[in-house]
Image (cartoon, rainbow, N blue to C red):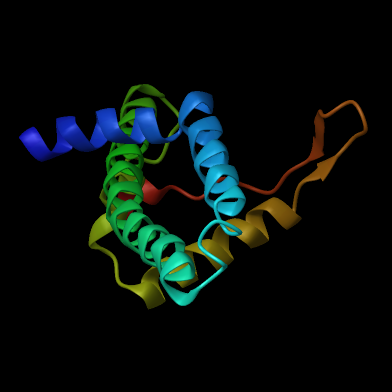
Length: 136
């Protein structure tokens, strides 16, 4: 769990305006140093290597924070489904379905949505009967 805490703090730091401004300043300074180093290969290699390493590490940091945020979002949605009387509780276990089953469910919901005619005010004016997913 220490990695998650460190990753969260690093993600907050990396996404801050100060960090972005600092990166812009470093690139600007690197560009200004070009004439001093005669724009040689080592001068170019410094920025290429630095940005490659930072990008490589940021991929893992972003993936970690994205996974965490997705888990949190799923838990919140699961709780909303659980406490809503008319919600289909079968939706709480979607993680166990394979890709074909999820696609079939997506098509079903798409067809349910297409059967709704929505007035300009946002009020549904026509609807088909509701499927009971609790019997799945």
